[in-house]
Image (cartoon, rainbow, N blue to C red; front, side):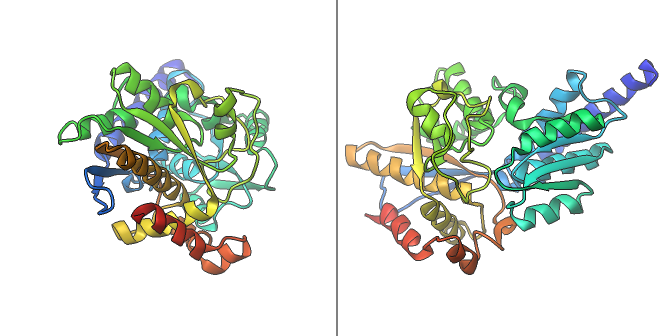
Length: 353
C-alpha cells in the first residue's frame, strides 16, 4: 500500500475509535444497601451497559489501539483472537465498526448465546475442543493467514493505560469522589486476562490510595494458586463453569504483587449469586459477577465483625442473557452437577447471618 494512503487510513480508524470512546461515555455505579451490613455500602459498576454488553468493551478498544499504534495492524489485514466469548463479542463489534474482518477462536463449551452474537456481528467463530489451547490455535492461524493477532491474554495489561485515560480504575475513583465514600475499603474484580486486576492495583498505588484490591477467583483457578506462592508456573487445580475467569494457567498479564487478597469461590455459589443479582438489580448478569458478589459479602462480614464501616466496589461484568441456556437453566446446571438450591442457601447465609 502507498505509505501516504496507509497513513490516511490509520488516522481515519484512530479517529473512529476516539469518537466511539466519546460516544460511549461511562457506565453507572449502582449502590446497594443490605440490611445485615449497617454502615457498609456496596457499589457495583455496571459494565454490562457498554454497547457490547461487558467490561471487555474497554479492553477491545485498547487492543485495537495498541495494535494500530504499534504498526501491527494494517489496512489490508483481518484480525483474530482467542476468547471465552465476551472479549470476542467486543472485538467483533469493533471490527465491524472499523470495516475489518474478525475471527474468534473459542472453546466449544462457550455459551451458545455468545457464539450466536459473534456471528451476528459478521465474525467467524472457530470452536476448538475444550482443553485445546485456543491461544495457540489463534497464534498459528494468524501466522499462516497473515492476520493480526490481538492477543488479549498476552497484551491486556500492557494495552491498557493504567495511569488514566478513563480506565476502569480511574472511572471508579472519580465516580466515588463525588459522594461520601471517596476512598472505598476494597475494589473487587476477577482475573481473566489479568488486565483489570493489574490496572486497578497499579492505579490505586499510583494515586497513593489506601483502597485494597481483591481478586475474586473460581476455586482452584490459576490466579489463586499462583498468587499464594507467587509461582508463574502454577496451573489450575480444578476447572470452572464460570466463563471469563478461572484460567487454567497463569497468563502473562497476571500481576500477583499488586493484588492484596484473593477470594476463591466455588461454582455453585458463583452461579447462585448471579441469580441473586437478578433479584437485587432487576436484570441478569453473568457468573463472574456472581463470583464478585460472594467475595464482597465475605469482605463485608469481616468488616462488620471488626466494627469497620465504609464501602466496597465491584463489577457487573457482562449481560446474563448470554447464559440463558447454561447458567440460568436449572436442567443444564443439574447436568453439570450444580445444586442451585444449596448455592442459593449459602449465598443467603452470607448475606444475612
